[in-house]
Length: 446
Ligand SMILES: CC(C)(COP(=O)(O)OP(=O)(O)OC[C@H]1O[C@@H](n2cnc3c(N)ncnc32)[C@H](O)[C@@H]1OP(=O)(O)O)[C@@H](O)C(=O)NCCC(=O)NCCS
Image 1 (cartoon, rainbow, N blue to C red):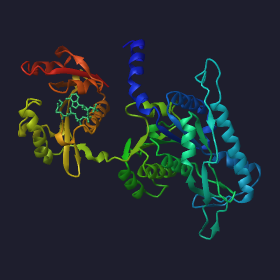
Image 2 (spheres, rainbow, N blue to C red):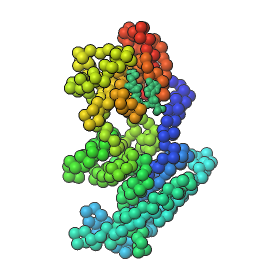
Image 3 (cartoon, rainbow, N blue to C red):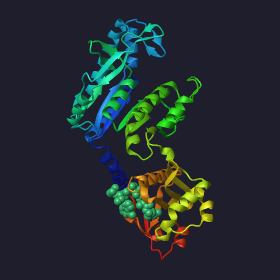
Image 4 (cartoon, protein in one colour):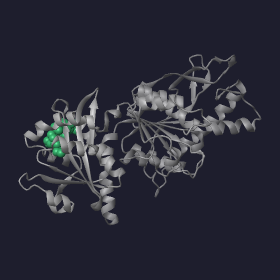
């Protein structure tokens, strides 16, 4: 493909995401370390892009290194207990100054609008307010944490009305109590509670890699690309002591927050490193993303078929074979090819199946035998299976997926496939093509 074709096809490929994200609430949580990074301005450009696509954005920032710097300048030492800083009245003064400075710096960057820059004509309106009600953390192990607090309540209605006006909401890690006090909170706590209160579509934590040169995969090496809430909880429960753990402390704490948010109704939470330029665009607008995604739904229901599934698959496909919708497969053949199948099951009931047949020489794959039980159709299960198969093909480095179908042409076309001729099939498949069935050949480039 030449660069123009590539650009056009890339631009078209992001259209479904644009439609899906418009009007949805995304909460971003990032630490103060990120703000000191030269690439932070690129993140702001990407935020600007999301805002222009109609995504409702809430940014929650931290200020840990800036607070530490201010404390050092004032020659103040603070105690920490279980990793939590004790904020006495003198430290609170430093916290207010550092958080205030960071907050205004971010607001200033969001206000840029220089011509010939990604911010030209941006006109982002930033809104901040007393959206977070806090209460003291209290006394732990006999130590009064004083002005170190935790979120008590979020004024979701006020944030929603700012978002409805098209404002980007910027929230600091400070909270206020009905008694008029100020509390020092963690960014994770605020971002999580905000996302839950807003019933956000996404909560996205941007991580700081210890080593700036480490890529996302290296840093998140110990975390899989996708986790369900249950899998994430298990991972956290079985975690090794932090010093020996493959998952560093910082990631563990964010994973905990992300899992809680998901459990409490946030559709998806993401952990991504901000060190890769355009990290949020890569995560949000590409099929595979670059970080770790936690979801409520039990992805476990989608799994590789096992030999004991043969009976269930046969029950599912035999009626379709009898109607001539699917090609006949004997039990023996199914047993031999069981490794090619993925099944979708729920509470032991088989809802659907699909098979993937690779043609490595042509760098292409066939999707076959996609079937959803008639009682469970029109609930997105077919789509779910298709996406999984596409991911599996792409993970094998294969980017051409074809299907032969007699009854579901439009279903596939609506999901990005296009008509092709038999000549475009791998040679071995062309030789097997059944001209009596006259199946339509459809191809999707992943
Ligand atoms: C095609 C099939 C897999 C879709 O599964 P599903 O879980 O119902 O699909 P989804 O829930 O993702 O999609 C539902 C949408 O597709 C539409 N749809 C379902 N079957 C369709 C078909 N054959 N042609 C066109 N559109 C179809 C539904 O009307 C619905 O549209 P809507 O969102 O506008 O209401 C399922 O109908 C099936 O098992 N068909 C028989 C087997 C088959 O033909 N397999 C393909 C050959 S390998």
